[in-house]
Image (cartoon, rainbow, N blue to C red; front, side, top):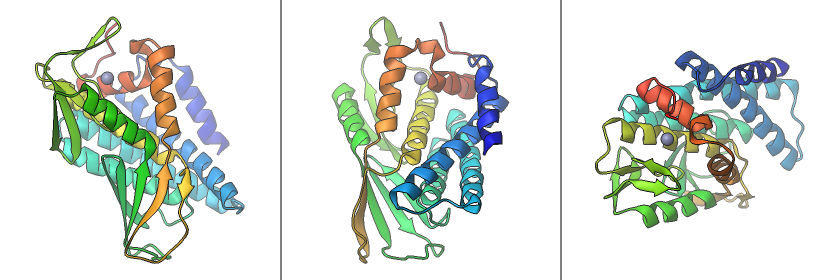
Length: 270
Ligand SMILES: [Zn+2]
């Protein structure tokens, strides 16, 4: 685990805006591996279990695989295969969630639609307490409300909820051709072909952040076909949103560096 922490530190020490695709891939793998381990440790502590050396290795390993998945999901979205990218991101999220909860990495396959995440049991789920677990995200509920507030129209396509605007979105002295609230991408009607892809990458980033956070509330175990399972705060996602918007210039935000590099192979404009 020291190796993962160290490699992440080295990767982050290099100037980020110049990051090429290989480095972005490496950062996705190292960071997802590390945070999956942290999420495993936190959830084990909440369940009053101890994390064995073997558990730790499993968390790092599954986290690394999920990191590859998230990177591929963003690459797919960036080149216009948004539906496939969104599905890949959902599988990667499932691996992180299941592993961090101490389950088999593929015990459930989740799909996020709006503020709800439906998690369907696979044959690898040993507990088999339900067919479908439903998780609700508080942060994504807020983001959906913000998206609806900004939107001139709402649309379901590519397996996700999009909004569009008649005019570009102005915030301070920046004019945006697209703006993504959480997992809800928004695009100005006059924007170029790269904008929807760029915004879809942001939606995948948001799903990635949501997956690593332990649930705020877990309901009692009960056996039924469909059940409400977790309330997720999405505090990481909200904190990231607020921190990025207030503390960093646009061109220094990691989410922008990643989205510009994957979509148009360039640095964010200054
Ligand atoms: Zn952006």
